[in-house]
View (cartoon, rainbow, N blue to C red):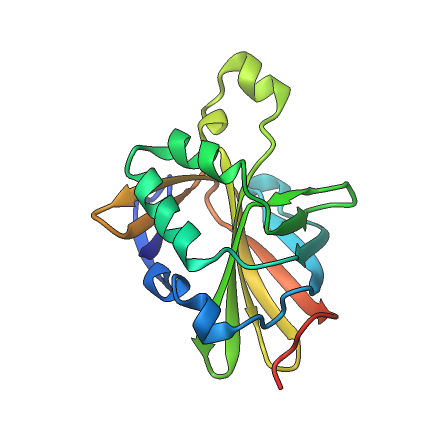
Length: 200
C-alpha cells in the first residue's frame, strides 16, 4: 500500500516517501526498533491570521501493528472510511498526546527505513470529535482520523508532520490518500526518543 496526502484547499496530491507495501514488512525490516519507547517533542500548528501556536507532543509506542493487520485494514478501507474507523477503534499500539492531557490511543503504528539511517514512524489514530462539531454538523466532523509521520535519526532525535484532522480513502488497490482538513499540516519539532530498543 502507498500513502498520499492532499490539502483540501489546493486539491493537490503529494506522494509521501512511506510505502504501505513496505509497512507490511515492517516486522522483518525494522524488527522492534523504538518499540517500548516514548518520543517527546513540540507540536507547532499554523492557523492563518493567528499565526503559530505550540503544545507538547508525546508518543508512547507499546508495539507495532503487524503485517497481517495492516493488510486487513487495507481491505477494510475498500468499504469506506467509516469501516476503517470502526476497525482501528478496536486496536491500540500505543498512546498519543498533543497537549498536557491524557491523550488518545495510537491505534496503528508502523515503522520503515527512510534513508540516510533514519527510521520513519507512521501513526494513525481516531481523533476526538468535539461536541459542537457533532451538534452543528460542521465539515470538520467528517475528518475522523489523526495522522502523524516521525523521522527519527540514529541518535534518537528527529522531526515530523502531524495532521490532527484527516480523511482517509483508498485509491486503487493499495494507495491510501490522507486528506488534511487544514491548509498546512502541523510540524513536530525537537523530537527525542526515551527508552525502548534503539538502533545498535
